[in-house]
Structure formats: structure tokens, C-alpha cells
Length: 498
Ligand SMILES: *Cc1c(COP(=O)(O)O)cnc(C)c1O
Image 1: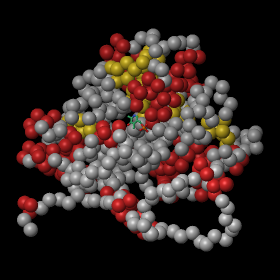
Image 2 (image 1 turned 180 degrees about the horizontal axis):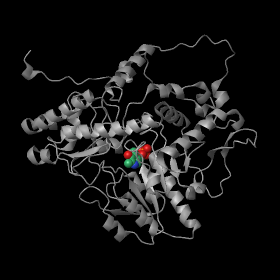
Image 3 (image 1 turned 90 degrees about the vertical axis):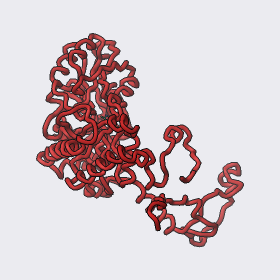
Image 4 (image 1 turned 120 degrees about the horizontal axis):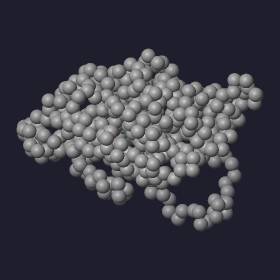
């Protein structure tokens, strides 16, 4: 066989419809041992089909194998590094899943009487206390089911706070490096998002901030470390400027991986913030599956938190120690059913208790160390628009490659897939052209970082010597480049192989 003519076979998994054939069965019902009834009479003929549904027919083993093969095609963090910046795709200890699977948690009804749910309410209460301790906030609501939801709840708290003081403020300031959910939450809460540009170091331009802040400023929404992986060293000044104008400081704490045990936003003077349990506190995410974006606030905003809040009465005046506090007349109301995604809270609680204060601090130290190590390995081969030490992530730019041979960040991301690695976040933050935003996380070993760097170096070489290989990637995946905008607009995309 001549290697010149060898073409990589794309893995191909036929659909269940293609694999099935009439008569195959996964399960047989036992013979009926109760009287039959006439279905048309029972539910009405209009609810009956004329034709049986066109479902694939397969044996159970065929279905299981189909999904196992699909799962192998899928990239996940249990398989290899997943360096998606701003997302913290770190390894999630399996013991947390075990804790969240305990029947006492999974079988509990959300409307169970507090008397019968003491352990679960205690867990929510103490998780809230731990998160308050970690973030430097005073009170926490675990109800928001995602970071974006925590942001919106936070902006509604800002509104309620100003409304109580008879103020009609209209503006919320958002730096241009912010996550897209920030301006979206600001708008949803009825505010105008005012963008301020970052300076050459990738930080908030404090002089520009002074010019923009005025009596119409309800809040600033700031991220620290910001999405460039840069720490806002002038955070105290930023807080003072906004406070002097009567505004509040909202901190986007979606990603606390670089802060745990080292800095607390509350100590820097921030008034409220959200945290992402599905990023920092080890709940698997990425498939859209349940998350949690607790909202933490300082004492002066505690009354506005969504209700109910898990509370404790050590005197047991109501007959038991832990209860849900619904008596919150100034609350912004509910932002989710029940108490949020409870099992995500269980995992975060198990994670925090397993690591303890020392362990959490080591998470942050190793996240920062790993990111700086990887940045140093990659710096010779890609541009680094914001040079210097990074926090938990850093942003490279494929500008050199684009100017040289036309290879873009998207091509590099696609080429990584041929090596069985996940791509970094690309084209974000928006202020970096051809951005490759990399967050290795603390759970990658040095060998894993070295391997990723070696592949990135090889792709940088290919970009110069054989750019068609990079622009033609991926070839080792079931499909090549997809029309992503069509996939989003026409959900019913026809399968076309190749
Ligand atoms: C992920 C993220 C968010 C949004 O969190 P979701 O849970 O995806 O809604 C907000 N800000 C930053 C900086 C993030 O990384």
C-alpha cells in the first residue's frame, strides 16, 4: 500500500434507523393477564394513530453499542485535555457523583416537609456559608441554575436596591473583554450596557472609567481575573470610583479557579457576584446539563435575594434546626423552581469538604501554575497580545499564521481535533483578533500539558510548511467542517456524509 494514496477513513456510525430492521426486538411484554379494553373508547379515537410510528427496530445490545460508539466519538475531559478558555473543563472527581447519587438525596421530593428534609436543607445552608466564606460575601442564594441566571438575578437585585432608594438609574458599565452574558443580563434587567475599552495591558482603563461613571450609573459588572486571564490590579480604585457615584459593583465570578483561597472579591469591596458551581466546583458541564450559578451578596443586599433561602435556627423555635425562609418581603422573587439544581449543590459541597481550605488554595495555585507553564511553552509559536504572567487562562492570537499563509484560529482549532484533543475557545474575547483562549486547569498533569504544547507546536509548523493540511482539517472526525450557522437556524439538518 502506498502511503501517498492512503486516505484517512472517517469514523462512521450509522443512525439507529439505518441499523434497524423489522422484527428485531429489545423487549417483549409478558402475555396480558388482565381484561383488554377498547382504547378508542377509553381515550377517544381522535387520540389514536392510523399508522404505527416509524420507529427503528433493534435488539437492546445493538442500541447500547450504538450509543457506546457515539460516546467514544465524543470528546470529554475523562478522555483528554479540554482546554476551553473561560469554561474550566476540569476533571470532576467521581466521588462527588457518588455523593449526589445517594438515595436520601435523589429520592427526596422538593416539596417535602422541612421536618423530613433536615439533612438536605442543612447541606444547602452550609454550602451557602462555605461559598460566602470563599467569596467574601455575606449571604448566598443557590437558586440560579446557571451563571447567566445568577447575573440576571444580580442585576434585578441592583434594580431593587436603587428602587428602594427612589433612584432611577439607567446605566451599567461593562468592560469590552466581558463574557457575552454580561451585557445580555444588563439588557434583560432593563439597563443600558455601557462598554468601556481595556487598556494596552488588557485591564480596565481607570481614567476612562472615571469619565464614564456618573449619577446615572447603577453598577459596574466586572470580571476578575478578566477573560484575558489578567488580574485587575486596580480593583480597589475601580470599586471606589463606582461607590462614590452611588453605584454597586457586580463581580462576574463564573470562574473562581484562580482565586480560591488567595483573593476574595468581597474583600476588594465588591457588593455582589455569582459563582459557577459547574465550573469551579466540579460539576461536569458542556452538554447543557444542570448547572448552578449561586448569587452572593453583601449584607446591605441580603434582603433582595431570591426566596426561599436555606436558613438555620439553632434554638429550634419551630421544632427543627434548618428551614426555608420565605418571609422575605423585599426579595426579587423566585428565579427557579424549588431551591435550584439541588444535586449540583451536593457535588459542590462534597468537593469543598473533600479539599478543605488548604486543598482549595492548592487548586488555584496549580491552575495558575499550569496556565503559566503552558503559556511559556506556546509563546514562541503564537502571538501573545497581552504579555506577562497570566492567571488561570491566557489568550494567544493566530495573527502571525494568518498574515503568513492565511491559516486562521478556526483552522488551528479544527486541526487539534485530528490529534484527539479538544480545541480552545476561539474568537473570544472579542477584543483579540484570531483569539485562541486556553485554560488548562489544575487537573492536567505536566505530561498532558507537554503533549498539548507539542501538538500546538506541530500545527504551527504545518501552518507554515503545509497550510492545506491545517485548512483542510479535520479529517479524522465523522464529518468535516459543518455549516454552523445553518445548523443553528435549521435544526432539521439532513445527514450528508463526507
Ligand atoms: C461561563 C461564564 C458565564 C456564564 O455562565 P453560564 O453558566 O454558562 O451561564 C459568565 N461569565 C463568564 C466569565 C463565564 O466564563
